Length: 317
Image (tube, rainbow, N blue to C red; front, side, top):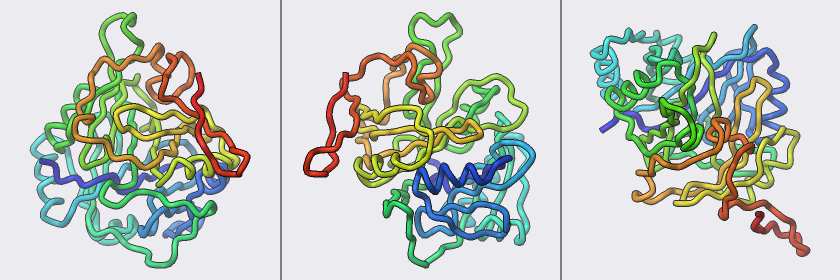
């Protein structure tokens, strides 16, 4: 049983904050929030003061992934488990925790090198949330969404998140297809709540700085995915309706090479949480959102505009 309740926030460093604003505000329809850095970009999608933080810097990198727990007792249990695993844990000061809009925060590096922060007591913003497209993002008990993290220490990372932090395995995608030479590599999905997965781990070569394959955000309807795709973002795939209750998704690419997904609301049943490990794609890129090398999928749809002005769906080959 894990004490992690969900993905709380993601903090990113970039060389071009203005272009990130173009993606997340003009493209994805997130609202601009407030934060301690005057030149930073703080994004709201719910009652939290910020969920995605974009800060200026000399390099493009993932600064931290924040996971939420219920209270100080849960935070203490997480700290003890991580220290028992031989990983050094930093207890942030009150000033440092306030900077992160939380009552208390601990921080450590996971085996893949990603800076991981665990917190409780988030700061809330009760002012009305006004998004550019009038959309509603789905967070609540399921948290911000999910992240896919690359790891050169894949086996160690998987063991850490499952056996130390208590994430639940919820299936995998095999990279390269059945014809790929051994050793077999898989992207593994891990969950902590009703969302199918809040984290996925992707095998990767050693990186110079912590990376982020993609960030998923969930909206309430399929039509909302369509509205959020009419902005200036660079979209890299069509709408894709997946089977077994996994939501419809469309992908965009950030200036830093990260991907953000707009997804319609769907909570899969328990039977879909344990997915076969034989889900195949024809290329490693497909497994992390590329449209190249994908097999025909009878569940794939694209949006069309009906003559009465109501967005509908049509099946595409």
